[in-house]
Image (cartoon, rainbow, N blue to C red; front, side, top):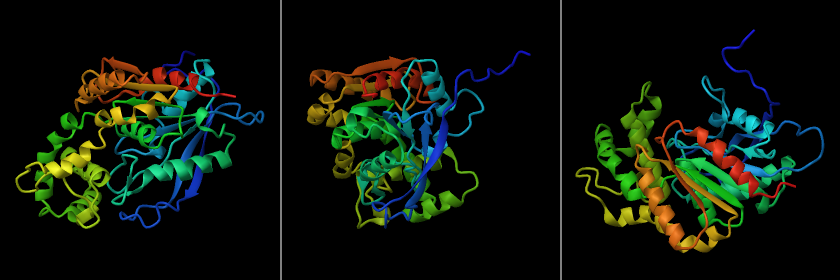
Length: 343
């Protein structure tokens, strides 16, 4: 009988769940969980011998987290199924993949250390990676690790290799946030409108968001703006422990706060982080040329600045938008693994 939907033709790996209780997230201001379960992909054949494996760390986009990355897909491949195929067809050496759960009550994460959200960069690098190495047969050294992600996860990958070097040998950013001045400000008036419906009370909005049966697109974008502010411009003395880069009544830009956001922009960080980036064995950057958030303009500028600084990297602009770009992993993941120590 011919199957209408193609059946898998390669051996399947499996997902295990790594339980970890964090010391660094204790007392985080959002009250988010400190005990979490993180999916870990183990390749087919993991139990056959005692070999050790290189590690990939997959950083989820905003609104998602590790558990959401490994779920069943109604159309196309899940990320674990994609890994099965890439490994099973010989396009990529077997790897262990960590899908960290870094979700927050602000709808996602930028993977930075912030007193308004938590020390998530430290959490990833100083807690989760050592926990993974203790529990699984990893090649427990930076030469055998790479980090990748898309959107906020792509930004996180860039941020970690720029500002916490020495943990990864390679990195890939798919449509990662960069060129902030072309990406974020268009959401500022929308955020003002949404918060005005809650008397400009940030706590009231966030509480209402999580109790709303059908939050709309504007609600999500407003929540994302708060998440970004908590990441880039924390202020323990303000509501939600953050400063917004605009006035809530007039939407006029607050230049001093906006400057704090721009200090995180990979475009602006790249020249000062050139030595860290040059120390990588591989840096992959791409974006769709029809990205609806206009990130392709930022990646173009990042590419130019890296080239000017003499940082070797792979840059690509593909025919696509910001959405539905998991297929890009078919290109980047084998490329990353080729640059890692595999035995």
